[in-house]
Length: 421
Image (cartoon, rainbow, N blue to C red; front, side, top):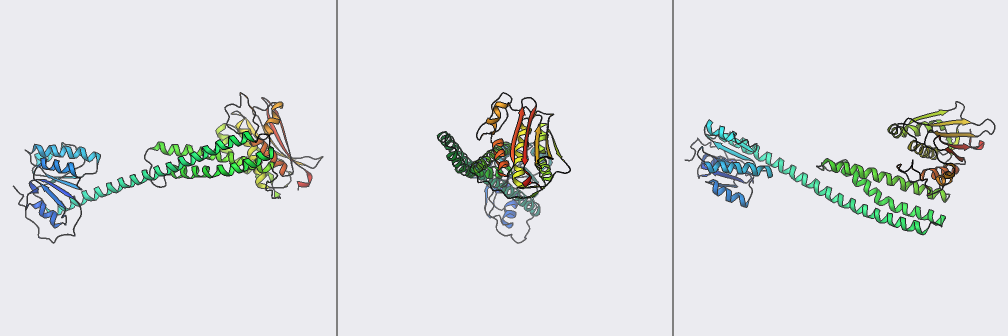
């Protein structure tokens, strides 16, 4: 029988476009629940008296809220609630259950369905309106969250597509690089010009890779979901940074070979430049277990040189030294004034694996790389030493490398008297 609870005569609320499905006794015309929903402005309400009819309607459409008026003997009603509970785990579907009696409430609670909200009878307008509003608000929030997640996934897919396109460009550029290098091995000037051109071509896809991987790594447009994607983006960014560093070295080396390095001479306190350079490499040295030291004489003079280029040369040499120095070893940067000649020398020495005398010319030649069992597992392109040699020479100083396998390497930058003081 329809519920006969007293009906409030409060004025109707603003119309709502929420789609509500009412199942059971309260679906009957003139029921308290139907009157409350109409009064609250829920005009798009469909009512079916039985669970069987509700199954048919749910197969065709999904409402925003289902209200089920269930009785203790209503087996079909309990089957409907179990089905709605399972369905709510796959999609957002809140359910309000109206029931009468403590025993029936106990049976409903035994369903252990977190998606069900229970309301006792007789029904009161305030309580019904409050629970309906809360359930519909919760559904809207979940739907907004779902749409936001879908938008993030779409953005992630778009950026992944662009990233793949950038990787394709990089692959094509690398193939072109290998082809053109093979064709220009005997043309030193042509090779330098080519390296400059191809380096600029490589920068574009590399910068795209770094940019898109940063967006994904930092999750700027929302969570990407699986944390593996963040790690993949981090790996791509590190690889792209490594490649970009190689490209920059190639460009610098091609400029040096063509005599086009930009040099700006100024008064420089070399001790400060050395200390700053080693601070930048402290993390690398700590990870490798290598001790970094700065040892400049108190009377070491200022140099008339390019601060940035001197720092670049020191960073290249110290990085190389750390790379080939076993854990427990050390790298030291010294500054001394030669009393006889008046020259100032900056010396970088390490306790690393060293280089055989016959291999030193190869290590200092452009695009040459020393191959040995000890160096096999060490990453590198062989650009650091020849690039540094040309930078030091462009500064007007001389570059000297002395090394012995098993004892380490000593690199000396010698600045003539006219660049001292």
